[in-house]
Length: 284
Image (cartoon, rainbow, N blue to C red):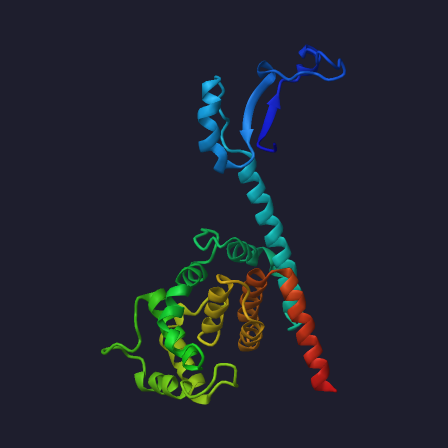
């Protein structure tokens, strides 16, 4: 019934009796079994009492963790291959720094945002993404979202909210960015006041913007992560994120790896085809 994997004694075929009605069929007996392994650990609570009644102890979980580890590795490798292709479309060679990005690809693919293998700021961003997005929910369809998410990220990374009184950041420039950003849809070219606000935030808290994270990209990364938790991110979100990171190889690499792991290889392939078709149409 595909419920157990049995580990048998090496000599079981020689010692097993044959079936009464067919001497070509050997009868497996309990004494031939070295250990009983469940295929699915969720069944342990159901089968363990029954096994105990006949003097059988179920072996520790072996196969399910191995299967999970194997599938996680396969998903990570597939996502990395997709990221290499996506980055290549933007003239970025990820193949030489593949091992650097493997922990991030694995974390996003498996939704394990507490992995100790992740760089500190990246791990914090993955964990704080939902909270950051919630704080910016009221302006999510506007460019004020980029400013608010950058502010919230600085707060999450450093414990400092730049709009609080007593700080040294030029608060008025940031407020102007939010105000003007509210008047512009998020998919349109970035408003100059929004861009100035993001530069102000990055200058005020440079320690928050490392490892490929920038004030210009943090909102896009948060959007990708949040949308991936409810299904696949919207293609427009991925395209906007890639465009926002095009000026820096590290930013672009970080965005490509997150996007590829969040969407998966098939959707990345479809997105790349759509982007290439759009480029060909524009050139014609």
